[in-house]
Length: 273
Image 1: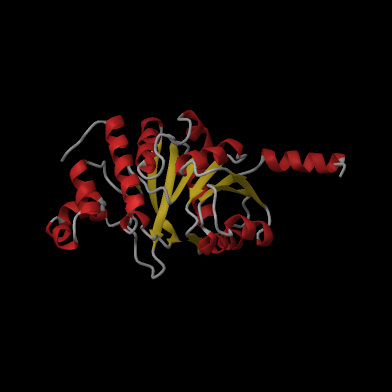
Image 2: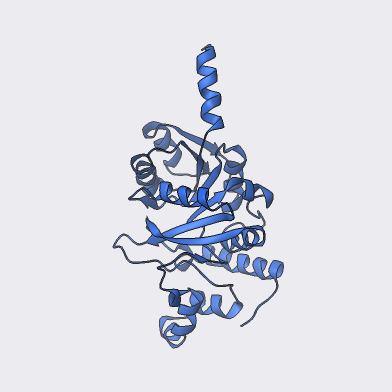
């Protein structure tokens, strides 16, 4: 097909004024990805956006069903190279002024993107922002965290419930519950389930550190963003996160999480308590 001059101009215009690129790293995500994409198309309005799926070698029908049922989505396929590495491929190919990283189990229910983009446009010192993230029943997921230490991560991840109850105040402080999650605040550790970046700042730090296969890459990138810009929690809009907590149920994922924690402390220094 021959591209006409007008079509070429329109294409260049779309690329020039692309406001946001949305990347989703998938791996056997067939059960959730369609609802995620449908919610994006339904709730993002008056914003020029593109969606990039970075598929990590799914063995289910993730890619097939996206191709058959979802329009206006680009797919980058690779072997299972990990969360950060997959998103980096999408970041490099993205054309937006802003870049949104989300998990495939995120559901949009309101005009969150418009509100977040408007805030970032008015606050150029912000390089990364995350909204309030809630469960399907509307309860807050306390995903903002203070700087991690070995003790806090071990208590939350490796101890039974009765032990965690003994250290509830400590865990609540780590998860910043004392803030009330009801005001804009600087955060040194935001969740990788939803991260909206200013693309220029993201490029300055060269995206995700690919030494992290999965887990802790969000703590690392929030910290690096915070060195040159601001990383904020914005409570005045929300998205739904199904949040299956795979590392709490799967031994292999638990070991990957443990290895990522070690890499994080090797990089940033071992803070025990």
